[in-house]
Length: 163
Image (cartoon, helix red, strand yellow):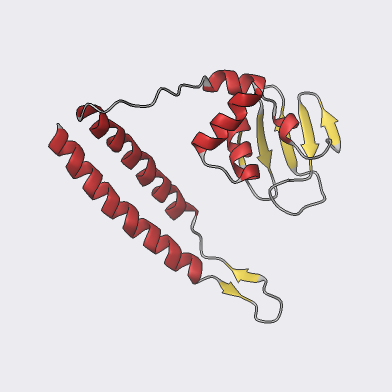
């Protein structure tokens, strides 16, 4: 089983490197206006970013399996994600008050991109959000990661201190 884990780690590392190289190349090919520095067009990198993220998570899983097989002790850091999602409200992360409210919904200007119109909707019933401007959506953890620029683990640690 250890050899399988090593071969998976090796192949996933190679796929991740190639995926990150392609992503970097595609982002570099985006055209910008010379006079105003506005992005004229941006090559769609969403699918490639998702693929890169999948490789990262698979690689992380195989590295954990290898550590277990090698008999290494894993750090004891367990967080109750359901409790975090249930107790930390998205509206508590928002930098301003809602501009509109409706039953089970609050509308804000999007904190993820410059906007003055309330296109960012917080669904109070399931504590999730969606922005109709930048098409971002998710739960309280995803929003905290995007607002603070943190990775998943750091975001969980930070939010668990608020619980």
